[in-house]
Image (cartoon, rainbow, N blue to C red; front, top):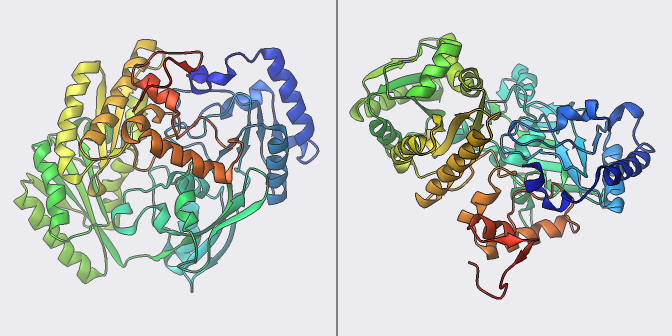
Length: 502
């Protein structure tokens, strides 16, 4: 995968790489202390992948700046030398967005971990990009506030990575994704120039560039500081665990809850294989006989929660729930959610490796996609455990495989591509919150036309003229789409280029 990701690197010799590495190290060492610059194999190996461990590449150099001035200097040097730069947070991403470039610099923001200030009056927090998601809520807790987006990796993932991927979490249905909870982002362009997206106000004149930056996967700028919105902690939160003996009934129940005008704080679904995996891991008290379970949370005042729990329970029973359990205290609520939050590590206990997919479909097609995935399991000879942000139709199928078996890895890639193509065919998208990275490059060809891809490249060029920030990711080239469509391409040259391809 390493060579396939960056085909232009295939002809670079080890000698050429060492010479280039020395040139870059010499230039960067004038602006970074010795401990902030890594280039020996034993030091750079920990950076060779993010949460998508199937694809690996050792970076040429790793820079760990400690100040904004150092970030600017690194970028200016790399721009002058035409060296690719891949920004990295905690490395928890699941699409290969932080996969290093073999001839590039991995720019780690790990040392940008300070919470600059919390303003309880404006309900905002200003934090550096390397601050952990959960750390924001912990710092805001004394003021009765918290940061709403809560990815499953919130104990480790950074706010800079959240901004890059437009992360969500189990409570994104009610409180929104990262884009809905960020006011301002500061950082630097590839040329080392400071740039600000958004403002401290709720709105800003001119182009809405903040919406372009959030979810751009490190392709437009390097993020150093983020201003986020905080929300008051609810007086009470309770969670319903509903069991269903049929997958379609569970899918229809999700649609029924939303159709009833209820917006739960969280609405998650797990199928039977996933339920079994997480119950063995966290012992949350899940119904192991159910074909699917739904977790539906309500938060607010005591009166609001009581009323909403009653309404949701009625809708779920009407939809065919075989059992309903309502959390009686905070400990039980957290136990219900602990299974969902630990779905990924639980899957890691029952399989050598897994590939976590991320697509969206209309809520009414939840059952259809699950049944389609069940057929794909037979087709590719691999198991798949499913966990969904059911409320907004965001799927997270976990394909279980052994990366040490090349054939299993190949089948896993085909399985994942099939899920994404099927999601698009059902009216969905190839990604919800994990990003495209390198994982979904081919699948982007299914959803977007050549004209749309060209427009995306034009937006990137407006911020990064040389294409040095996180190159080779997110936006597929015409050649890649042609290859994915089974067109033979040799030496980067298409036969009969005058012919219409799309």
